[in-house]
Length: 382
Image 1: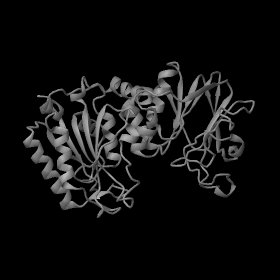
Image 2: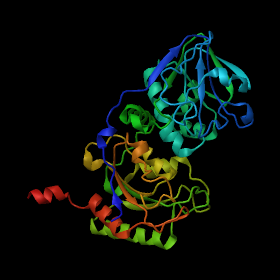
Image 3: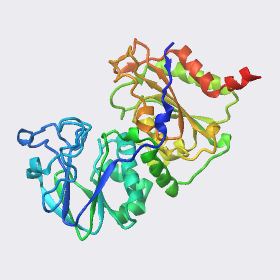
Image 4: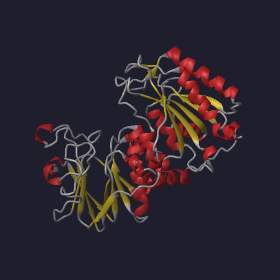
């Protein structure tokens, strides 16, 4: 039976936060891109997207984080901080910022999902530990600006300077705070980083829909012109999946509205963030294949009053028989387990490919029954 559920939920609890330092006035920060000068770079793969390397150093040349205690060699994608001495030649311009500042440049800052789960948790955590007047130096990408402006337009307007790759920013008349996460993938910190992000979003977007009739069961489809990286359910198979959802909604007297979400409108245009937020803030259950559309779970209500009010997510992921589709067991539990969500997973069947996927419908029905059916432990106890 092709159904698997994530274990180790204790990993969702608080972890020791990342190491961080406040460098003295006159310190510098930069994040590098070797794309146009790869032949001159020690690590030519650095591109400020999926291979992120940054440097922080004082006016006296001291590194923010030295090499002596590094867990990974410089080429390891999990390592962010490298010596400025090897890459300062890439600098295209220098900018001076006055007053206290904090800087972060995370994994894939051009991508919707990776901004939400591999960048913003660290920004939110830094925001919670530095003084309120601190300016933030963040990646100058359209996606970063769009998402962060939606979360907190005042913060962006008054406290953020967006810097380019290969731009060296010097902080005068204040300290420069930088952090060293153990990996570019922030999920390992669980609540430690995601709790500040959940609070930050809620401060500016407090909408709450406690009544079942006002909520949604969201089915995420990857069938659309903006979908990348495959994992599209075969179209008739997807209709069979939707039929099972509708049948289970009737079976368990679910009063929510079933919403089919692709992130696009009928004309193929990307939905405004306000609409995406509203769809997922109302979600009681989210179902669909792994993909950036499911990263919208960040908008779900962040403070359920009990376990019954937690959002349920049922995600289709690659298993041991479907390495061609994607890395096995790559699901949102592993990247967003700091969210108050009950995670469920169904793996693709072996006849799936990179482009077209299938799931076991019996396993899917079992998963729906498991999520929406009566509490079996209570029944057995009676």
